[in-house]
Image (tube, rainbow, N blue to C red; front, side, top):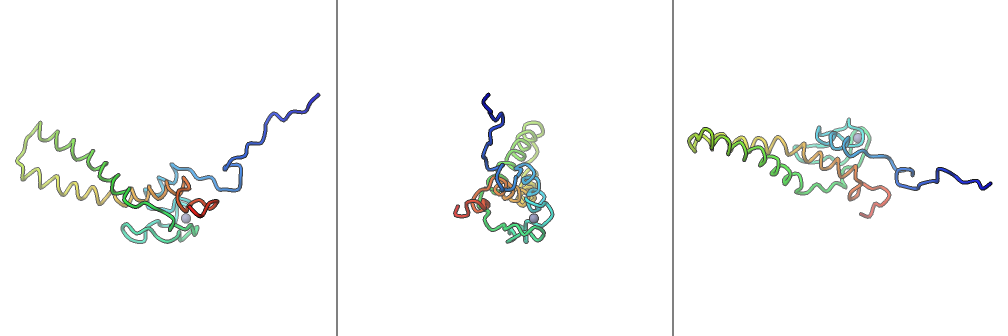
Length: 142
Ligand SMILES: [Zn+2]
């Protein structure tokens, strides 16, 4: 009788020595401004300045390439909140234009400022979890 292995070895990145990175966990840690790997160290050293490395687990943050993506995402999110609100209030109540502008412009500015850092943290977390750019220690040239 032939001896056949019922469970052939599958060689994948997960079966090797590389660490497993959960995208959703890294995204949530980034949203809170924490290191995507340990969730304890701070991700930012200033409002939108990503720190060089994690103060707890020493993860190097410099390979991140968030660039303009957080700003684009914030524009999309804030636009989907503010524009329907403006349309709803205009069609149902039609208040004066100066009153509307005195509410919508500060609201837009505040929402954008509040969302920028969490969204940037989430982008950096996802880039780390997906091993994008220099976050892949197996292929440091990318
Ligand atoms: Zn860390």
